[in-house]
Structure formats: C-alpha cells, structure tokens
Amino acid sequence: MATAAQWIEGARPRTLPAAIAPVLAGSGVALHEFGFCWWRALLALAVSLLLQVGVNYANDYSDGIRGTDDDRVGPLRLVGSGLARPEAVKAAAFTAFGAAAVLGLALAVSTSWWLVLVGALSIAAAWFYTGGKHPYGYLGLGEVMVFVFFGLVAVLGTVYVQLQDLPGYSWWVATGIGALACAILVANNLRDIPTDTGSGKRTLAVKLGDAWTRRFYAILVVISAVAIARIAIATTPWACLGLICAVPLAVATRTVVTGAKGKALIPVLQLTGVGELLYAVGIFAGLWIGR
Image (cartoon, rainbow, N blue to C red; front, side):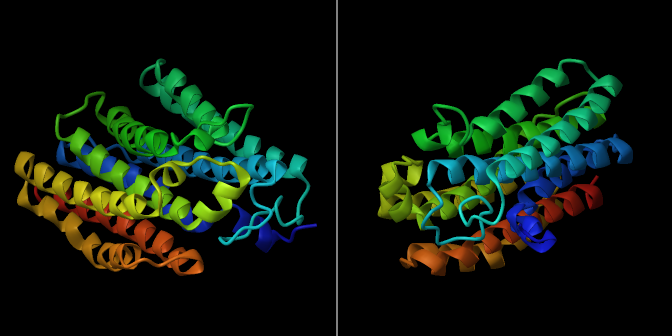
C-alpha cells in the first residue's frame, strides 16, 4: 500500500502553481476593476486546485493501466510503480472531481447557472486527457486543452464570478497564464519523448520532434512576455511587475534550448511552475497598485 507521503507525491504538488496562478491573476483583474470578492476568489481557487489534483490522479490511473508509465523518468506514479491499486487511484481522481463540482455549483448559484456547463466541460477535459478509448492527450491535443482550461477558462472564469463582466485586457491575462501552463506540459512531454514514442503516446512533442518542441517552449515564454506588455498598455505600467518571472523562466529556457534531456529536464517543470506563479503574483500586485 502507498503511504500518505506517496499519495501526496502522486498528487504532484509541484504542478499546483498552474492551478493557483490563473485564480491569482484573474483576481488581480477584479481588484483593478474594484470588484474583488474574497470568498468567490477562494471558491475559485479551491475548484482549480481540486481539478488539478483530480487530473493528476486521473493521468496516473489512465497512463498506468495502459503501461505508459512502466519505464518512467519523471516523478512517482502510483499505478505505474505498483504502489497503489488502479481502482484506488481512479477513486481519488473522482473524489477530487466531485468536490470541485460541489464548490463550482456554489459559484454557479451565486453568479450564473451556465457556469455549471463550464464546470462539466472542465471535468470532462480533465478525465479524457488520458482517459477513455481515444484520449486527446495521446493525439497531440494536450497543449490546446491546457491553454483553454488552465488559461482561458480558469482566468476568465475567476474574473467573471467576481465582476460578472470580462474587461478586454483580461483576455491577455488569460493568454499569458495559458502560455506558461502550456510550457509546463511542453517541458514534461519533451522529457518523455523517448518513452512516449515507445508506448505509442503521440503527444505534440512526439509529433513536433525534439528540436521544434524546444523552440515551441521558448515561443510560449515569449508570448507570456508580450501579454504582459499588452496588459500594461491597457491598464497600468505596474502590470510589468509580472516580469519578475523572468529569472526562473530564463534559467528554464536556457536549460531547454541548450539540449538538456531526461532527468536534467525535471527542474525545468519546477522552474516553469514557479515562473508562472511569479507571473501571476506580479500581475496581481501590479493591477492592485496601479488601479
């Protein structure tokens, strides 16, 4: 049986900045527009974190039963390592999804009922990333869905539940956050190109190949910087505080473009996650100060 510490590791806590960042950045928009609502922000954060944990356990389960994780370079997987029964990991995933659904329903009741549909689509996207007969993560669509759900949906949803409106620049906030969330997945899939190729998992990295995947990572980082510039133009120069992400992202980008492979890419995931979180902290602080 897996220990409590191994279950926590299986939830992949290093990926949680990707769940915190969009809510923090979206709340910065709400602050700038004088519409911040702390309890709705906290509910949105809880939903985002539960969805991230749920998708991590769901991926562990689905990849594990397919044998994709039998020869894994990255962090611990519960099913692939044989530490936990597949049914237990699947149950953990749906427990997290269920809790996210309950809290999301509370947000929908207090704002708009159509958010129930958004929540249902988010849970479906989380499960079918590697679950089901034709998982879209095996077809090279993972980055698209991460951009949509951990960028656009998460940021704009956070803004909407607080303002019941979407200022134009909030789309740039969502684009920057989505680009960095994608960069985390790109780094992960770059590391796993050899094992994914062998197991038949056709991620975008497998399709693009090693060299173009490295370029794609760098392009996503540049997109996030362009988004900061657009936000600053539309709001306040203080939004440029988001560029505090430059230190970890510069180190991560250098590691990627200089050809690091295998375990040498593991720190890139952490650095990119920290960079995304700092990006959101900077935007939050800048929009607050400059309102």
